[in-house]
Image 1 (cartoon, one colour):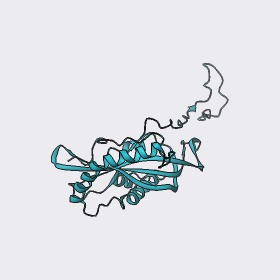
Image 2 (tube, helix red, strand yellow; image 1 turned 90 degrees about the vertical axis):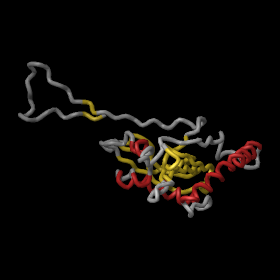
Image 3 (cartoon, helix red, strand yellow; image 1 turned 45 degrees about the vertical axis):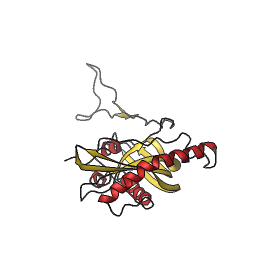
Image 4 (tube, one colour; image 1 turned 135 degrees about the horizontal axis):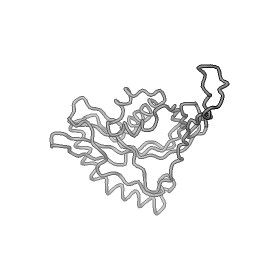
Length: 230
């Protein structure tokens, strides 16, 4: 049984300069017009979703999506993968935990800079017409903190005490034909114009000096040279 899709169908394309343009500017008005054009497809998808989820409402969904988003990221702080599976899809899970083994994550949600907003709704069938999925893209502009430490407790990425403004387009998915299904975080859309992320520093263990053949060993029996960390 397919419980999630393998990606995003008809991915939303964020307008360049979003969060910096005024809604009254030429670019802002153009963005608003484009959203209205795409709203037709979104409205048709909303009607389809309501056939399976009668409580689905565009005005209420952003708050629900924000709660899922926050709870999912907090699961990374204590490596609660069991809970994380209930909040993100099978497609999203590997992206959330990739390269975090033996690392410590400290993430926090500080505040919303703008109210979360639904920017696109889509429905699509998988495998057969009897298996229907809904995807909702939510624009989130918030302030967050993130720090990642290696197994030795050394900082690899970010800073715990320095909040950063983050603009994200997060896709949430639900298997509509599953009566027990719920909305889960599915993917993040990264615009082509987005600045590159700060790379994660790699740390390695450098072994201590190795004795040369025939060199006298001064350490007590059973003791090995102490490794050096770098």
